[in-house]
Image (cartoon, rainbow, N blue to C red; front, side, top):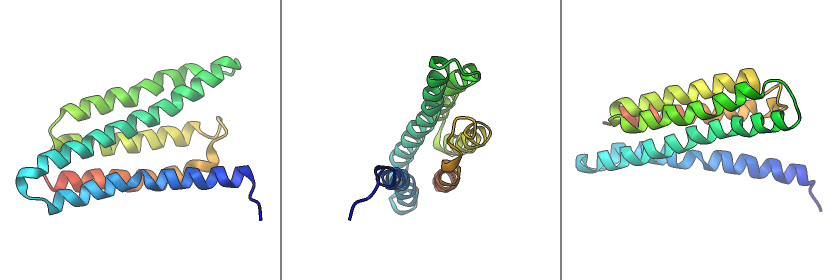
Length: 150
């Protein structure tokens, strides 16, 4: 029995996407379980992971912008500019104390999803929006639950 390369790639994308939620959920839960003196370290780990993921979401747009620019498709400027914005916002959130930085990251995650909803269809990525929505909900809620533990 053989599977198509497309089906195998789709399974990989789903596995990596959902697997990427494990640090969000695990660290948010851990913040409620560890002794008070360890909370700042776990919070920093959650903020760091959240900032890395937010930066990754911007990188998707950078890649779309480069592809558009290479093929002379309009819209590349928006994607290139927006592609760096999430990383800058994540950096600021990382500099904040956890009680403020984690909700800020949750907000940036939602903002990234809203931008993706408006732009991914033109880039041929609309098929992935339901996955993006689910990943965003869990990641943002994890950041908010982690902030509530501080």
